Image (cartoon, rainbow, N blue to C red):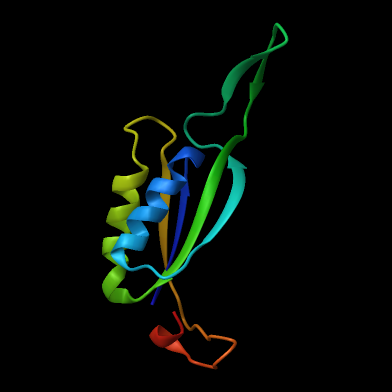
Length: 112
C-alpha cells in the first residue's frame, strides 16, 4: 500500500477530486494549508500599501491506495492539478505499513 500526499493550488481541488473518483479512489482527506516553495510568496496591494506574503494558500490531499493503483493516482493528480505555472505543487509517495478499518477490523488493502 502507498500513502500519497499532494500539495496543490486550491482552485484545482474539484478537478483533482473528480479525476480521482473516476479512477476509483474511494476516499481522501483534504486540508487547507499554507506554505511556499520556489515561488517564495507573492506581493499584494491592500488599501494602497504593498506587502509581501511568504506563505501561500494551498490544499493538501492525502490518499491511501493499493500498490497497483499508486502510479495511476500520481499521474492523475499531476494531470488534473497542472496549470503549467510555478507553484502548481508537489506529490509525495510513502510506503504505508498497515491500514485498519475501525468499524469492521478489516486490514490491508480491504481496509482501503
